[in-house]
Amino acid sequence: MEETKNVVFINFSGYLLLTFLILYIGQRPISGIFGDTVNYIVTFDHYRYGGEIPEVNDYGWHFFMKTLATLVPYHIFFTICAFIYIFPMYKISKEFFGKYWYYAFVMFVVSFSFWTYGVNGMRNGAATSLFLWGLSFHRNKIIMGLFFLWATLFHKTLFLPIFAFIITFFYNNPKVFFKGWLACIPISLVLGSVFISLFASLGFGDDRLTGYLTSQADAGTFASTGFRWDFLFHSAFAVFAGWYFVFKRKFEDKFYFQLLNTYLICNGFWVLVIRANFSNRFAYLSWFMMAIVIIYPFLKQQFFKNQHFMIGKVMLIYFSFTYAMYYLYWG
Image (cartoon, rainbow, N blue to C red; front, side):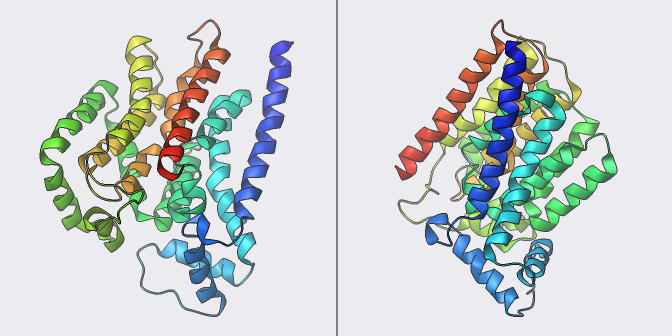
């Protein structure tokens, strides 16, 4: 009886939170305090007044903006973007965890990068959420592939997690990927500048990404310099969770191995370029998966006597780091 009441409560709370967040982020004021919101408005106005799409890498995003600019006002556009960003977090949570989807969804919401990529890096946030949406159709490879394609049309950097996920279909042993992730730390400490130069020279077909690796950050900005031990500590939450459940508790789940290994590949790439200014842009290509990597085993198998209480403690610790980071950087 108590569990039934709990399920009813968390589902009601979850749908209320889902709706509130989409409307709250989508209907936010057009203000510079919301990061790149004003810049998106400038582009939106360009298309609203008949401007053509310039030569850009992420044509799908600009086509999306131009289409909506001719049909809806600013706030409807932002609300649609908020839906594309937040709904897939609900979708993948519901797909894998059924009536306990609320726990996973809240983990996404309290993630360190959730707010930033909802109101600032909107295009990147939308693209990574489309990747999550695709994962929720993992049993239907065609639909999953279409969502992956949509994600790359919004932001080309999604080729990295897509490529990493494809690798797991051919090799899916977490032990090897854990060793690879650990190896990236000393390699980055010794040869980090070499990898920054290497990846910058490759360019990834996007001048902005090269700029993220090579440009200088302004003093006092979020993109501070040096080896980011704080961000590495944050990234290690998911690594530790994966290690604990896979090796200590012998958790066996093929799809979880795929999620974990995809995270380790993408985060390992970021560790190699961690010294770069704005390397947080690359970190997000793994961070957007942290919530599900951490919470997945809790919602699939009974590990603790008071499992729901343990889940609550994990969520509190996870949120506490987010709060502390925001307090330190913007407090």
